[in-house]
Length: 87
Image (cartoon, rainbow, N blue to C red; front, side, top):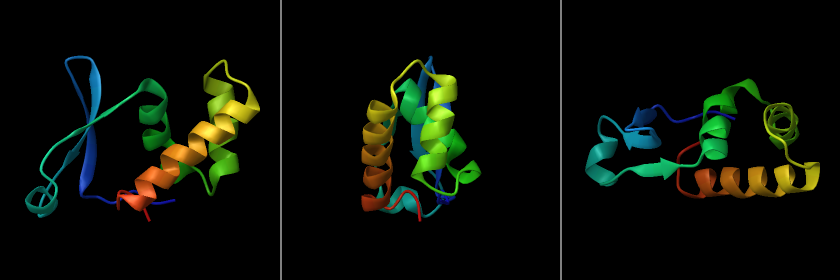
């Protein structure tokens, strides 16, 4: 999975925020607040070849069962793809 370079994550006042940069700021007016787990997924996207790799990382990092990790990870990655944040 590959993040588009037009979005970067910043920690602003204790919140993880995805911020558009460059030409993307003309098309996308706003910022996206990420939960702790969403920020973890964003930070580790390029380390993983697929959802199963990400689920394994999630299980190492958080106290969560595999079924929940799979469902939540797939849902968030699907949203990122649908909105053009990753390829």
